[in-house]
Amino acid sequence: MLQLAEQLLNGEKRALSRAISLLERGDAQAPALMGRIHPHVGGAYTVGVTGPPGAGKSTLIARLAESFRGAGSSVGILAVDPSSPYSGGALLGDRIRMELHYLDPNVFIRSMATRGSHGGLPRVIKGAVRLLDAAGKDVILVETVGVGQTELDIMGVADTVAVVLVPEAGDAIQTLKAGLMEIADVYVVNKADRPGSQRMAANITASLSMSGANLPWTPPVLPTRAVTGEGCDALFQQILGHRDFLTQSSRLEERRARRRSQELLEILQEELGRRLKERVNDSPRLAQLMARVRDSDLDPYSAALEMLEDASLPLAALEPIP
Ligand SMILES: Nc1nc2c(ncn2[C@@H]2O[C@H](COP(=O)(O)OP(=O)(O)OP(=O)(O)O)[C@@H](O)[C@H]2O)c(=O)[nH]1
Ligand SMILES: [Mg+2]
Image (cartoon, rainbow, N blue to C red; front, side, top):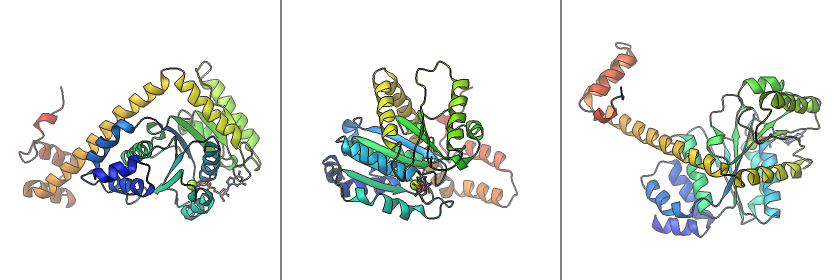
């Protein structure tokens, strides 16, 4: 494991891949690895790209990767659940689109699936970001699918969040209601070649000016055509602009500090949950309560309370604070 950490800190791609896998499967060595790399974390800037399935997130990320590479930055890309059922196995598409970058030793690309992932996905992504950071990536681009009820709170991962919308995503107001509006630092209306894109951009701008007249940062609304690259440089510039905005005040550090506390709570929750399940399976009395719930002989609320009071669960320290 220590060797793995050293290789990772040297920026070796294979070590990075192995470390992420280790994290994904919840390996018992993960905490030691994370502890070892911690002094080397904090140098990377993270950009989240989120939006509905098929909006063009991967295509945009490939463009952004190009821009960041052009500026001399090394790039890590994490695509979370890219194989959304909507656009039909886009993982392959992602691969083709990013093929160019595969040959570049300063670009690291990794897909992570929601399904079948061990443990909490947000926790794993944050961990993977840490690993990429420690491996010396200057910029980390994280793609997540989000429509309204974002399964993954991208703000918990990224310094700058770009929300990608497309004209056919429909009413901008709908998006506003769905809560996607509050999380963006930059709005992208991709597929600007399609009808309705100008109206959509205007709608977003109007909603923004209604909601936050004197915010310190007004999220720009940018039309793009990711396939041709049109508007992508403006997007790149706005991301740099937002980064400057955050770093010139204490905002970046505040954001990151909040995220770190949140991350700790997630890890705790996950670990407690895992231990809890082990106990339940291990104790005949608790397993019996579980069986009664399964058979609908007992309601889950009463069973939960009974379990929490059972001596085989040492949860006395976790009594609710009155
Ligand atoms: N017309 C048009 N098509 C685009 C544009 N940008 C991307 N596309 C196409 O839209 C499709 C989806 O693009 P992706 O980049 O895979 O979108 P995504 O948001 O990553 O998709 P998922 O990861 O499946 O959610 C592809 O066929 C792209 O070629 C654009 O600006 N205009
Ligand atoms: Mg994609």
